[in-house]
Image (cartoon, rainbow, N blue to C red; front, side, top):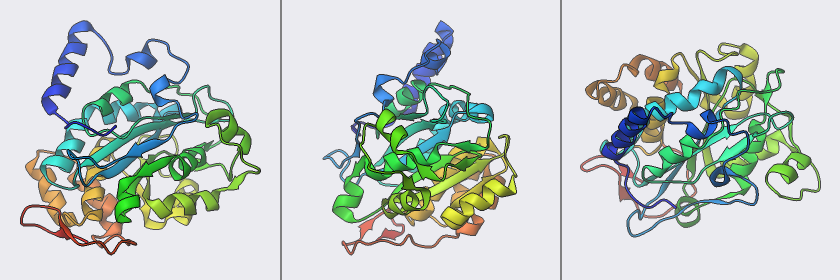
Length: 319
């Protein structure tokens, strides 16, 4: 996976076709699907972000979102704003050879489809993966969802050349509004992913594992059931520090992701990114500025000592 180039023209043509036929961008779910799509089934799966002649410096970006309860509208917002996300990453040079994976998170204690994980894609197939997601809308009603299960998958079932060849972490964005469970359940892992664990894995351990290879962010957007809840924010701040990010407008999620990557890649500083948003006609600047100001524009900590490669023409060098 990961071949091809994202095209706004292809996206627009598919959107026009769906509207002409009266079809939803989420036809699999809206058509009544209640089981995971085979392309997004995590059982026995490994998701790979690999270099190629076409994309020699792949940058893996994973976006996993809660689709329970009030969070069920998140994927529709992401799908509608894909052009903004990919436009900033590609046209503005925020990341070289970005490969994007989309996935969805539910509650493994009660939902029929608690974990869905697509492929890393460089072209419009990422839109296809979004459209295959089951928008279950369930959840357990106890302010807890299975984010830890998603982090387990990302820690132990992904392979990236960015890490293996260059010692550079990918980017993981989890969009939600509740707490994770305190442990990764070995029974849930066996049932949904297929691994045979001898015992449950403590949450802190799996967070340490996933953050070793992934710059991990938790986005808590306005409009969700627990937006503004201090217990939820404190929980994620304890795990991720300032990478637990509050958004006061869900519509700014794609711009927030893009600028976070741009900052991490040192392609921009925050002021440059905000000017890019303004030039693109985005109204998300205020929200993004407020959300990302605590992160600053500092360099990501890396383990690699490989030679520098240029990030933007005439711009910053990535080390």
